[in-house]
Length: 287
Length: 287
Image 1 (cartoon, each protein chain N blue to C red):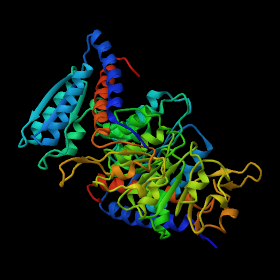
Image 2 (cartoon, each protein chain N blue to C red):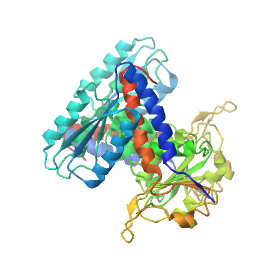
Image 3 (spheres, rainbow over the protein chains, first blue to last red):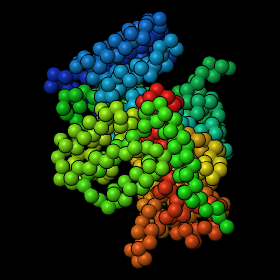
Image 4 (tube, rainbow over the protein chains, first blue to last red):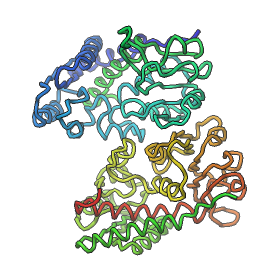
């Protein structure tokens, strides 16, 4: 019987900490505020935005929604990013991505101030993750992987962690964050020769290749801790499923996140935590 | 009998390419120029500087030496970095490190323009290595590892590469560059539980932990390709030695770099190549 690593208690613990710190800031006259910049009306964006707003409300963090029409110009987008970067009352910015293809996402990322980059999309934040300097903010999903494992007491120091997937949103930054915690890390990807042989060596496996139900019991060592980053709507049942075939893998592994109910809630809680940290830094408090 | 992967022919091939491209630039009125910024008179710095100057001369790349006394002020250092960043005739800057402890190296790195950062020490370059965007320049030693393996036809795509060492000068960037070439990469470090078990799984092993003679035959799979990044003066014999016990490892492995005569020459050749690339970019040519 594997330990089921649900996201809710991890998210709650992070939110409680953020909430206490947000209250302390508010008492000093600075209420942490997140700006959510959305272009267009993609259902995924709207759904994520709702979750983030709910989590912010729970932590006493303000939200400013900035919504541009899908047909906005690059100039309008840049003006919004730059204005939000300059507002002293806005401590963090979440720019929903991907942007409509007609817009230059790279230019928008460049215009973002690293100190307000809540989801690790600027070069400054990514360099901070790579070098371990602590500058900027890590991508929320990658950091959520580490927060979840820590919450459930999974040993990271000296562990062999296998990260399947090398995206800049999860795989690569998660590998760096796990390494910073003392893990030996293997990064696998579409070009990996024998993926199952690699993942079977992991005390920890981060499944983040974006293919529904790809991983089964044959991919995991007995007792491994598995974090499933995938979220897919099953076309047959309409239900949400991860990269891992949960029912098959669960009897083999030592610990596993469910989908739904796993990493997603932790990700928005990390986002809110970032906003509070950014507000603390802006107020000259915190680390 | 292992293939001995000497650095000289790799360095020569890189220099010939750099030389042809430098000549083409010179014919257009732009001669690539490297500024070497050195603070103080550390023998290692002077030795590296000599090697770099010789290699630049061989490629038709100009060098401007800027030397500050070891007791210079931060203001003087910053002024030098900023001035070199502004000179249009200087295409690349090599700042010898470590700086004397009284100086703020991080501030100096920040003042360096990524486009002229020849050894991958700015956040911009490191973000480029991490994201694979191609921006800035990779640390020369890390890139030299990849150039050497490519020159000797060691297959990278699908290979399992084990990088022992996680420095920002070699380990981490080498891991990213090898991954970008299609390798599955494991990064090991001082906290790795069973280093020999990890390195024995490598088709390629990059030995970069900075301990003389640490690696022996027990660390390598038969036929593995081993790149030895270490350079140490043996206190008993005064001779240069690497992280690998060459004589013991050579009969086991498939290919190995000698020390001396291995990676060092490739590193300065990569540096010169970077200067030419920077000059091409500044002239609106090249990639």
